[in-house]
Image (cartoon, rainbow, N blue to C red; front, side, top):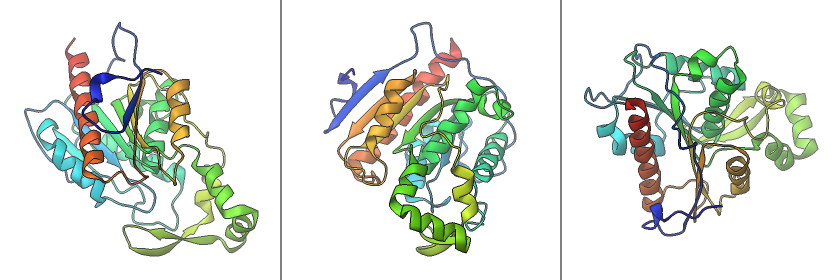
Length: 278
């Protein structure tokens, strides 16, 4: 563990740094395509960003919208795709990954890399997408267009945690009835979620595999939804990972949290821009 002085201005921050070798960061592929979603356009900027929202959220997520405003001047495009596709009941992990792939393909083909930002479940998904580069998977063409990751309280280990919280009786009821109600933050009420989501996540790893991309994680020590120790395990077992631990809960919506997240995003963009010009 290395405690860095880079963030000394942020109270309660402990930074664990495991960066890429001095030889440089992974090469960024210039493969990008026409955008079809609402985004902020800045022709003189050099990066794109996609924000992947959390479970039971959507494109109007307050955290994602606020971060987009903070980063607007340094980005060519910024978009928040709907990972549910307007159908929460039939949500599945393959469906989420397919929507992320579509969102990546929708980014303008201008040679500028994409920073993938993910919150909670969106953070887990972003890490899974990045892991496909190393796995040489069918989605590798899409994941290669991503240059770096910023994960905000990523939901590592979420399948086992759900099973623990629901208990065997709860899981059995979900499978028997075919659906289970969950609070949907965007809808501001409970909505039924089909058991297909749970079944589609059973074979997922607790921690996504190694990615060749640089990864920055921000996680709160008092997070009661996702234990920050999962992020600590990911950071210590993977290369190219930088972890910021901060006093805060899962939401990380205090002004100082938002400032730190924006700083991390801006720092990633600067480093990625530098590596792309070398």
